[in-house]
Amino acid sequence: MENKFQKCLERKRIIPFSRGPRLVVKELELADFDLTRAKASFQEKDYKWTTIQTYYSMFHSARALLYAKSYREKSHQCLIEAIRAIYLEKGLLDYIFVEALQKAKTLREEADYYGEFTKENAEYLVNKAEEFLEKTREISK
Image 1 (cartoon, helix red, strand yellow):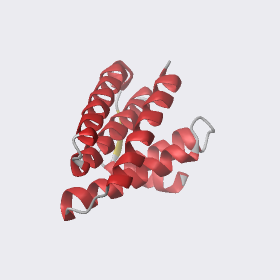
Image 2 (tube, one colour; image 1 turned 135 degrees about the vertical axis):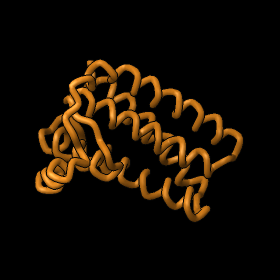
Image 3 (cartoon, rainbow, N blue to C red; image 1 turned 120 degrees about the vertical axis):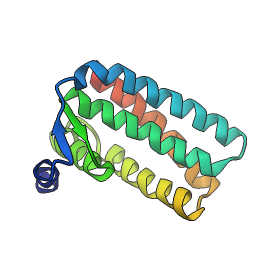
C-alpha cells in the first residue's frame, strides 16, 4: 500500500500543505454538516442524496486526517491511499474505516453518475460516516 501512496506523492496528487493542521477543525465541521444533511435526506427517503452526502462527510473526515499530517489531496483516490498509508498501516485507524471510505466513494459515483442507489446502502453509509467522524475526532485530539 505504501507504494500507491508514494506514487500519489510522485504524481503530485498528494502534496505538502503546511496550513493543513490549522484547517482540521473546519474539515470536521464540514463532515458534521454533511452527515447532518445526509440524515435528513435519509428521513425524507432521498437515498441518492443520502449516499452522496455521506460520502462527502467521510471525505471531509479523511481530509481532516490528512491535513493533520500537513498534506493535501488532489485526487479522491489518492486521499484514500494516503489515509491507508499514514493511518491504517501505522495502526492508528482500523481497516473498516478505510474500507468504508472506499465503498462510499464507489457508491457515491454509482448514485451520482448512474442513478443507482438503495436504501440499504444509504443506511450503511450513514452509520459508517458517523463512526468515521467520531474516530476522526478522537484521533485529531
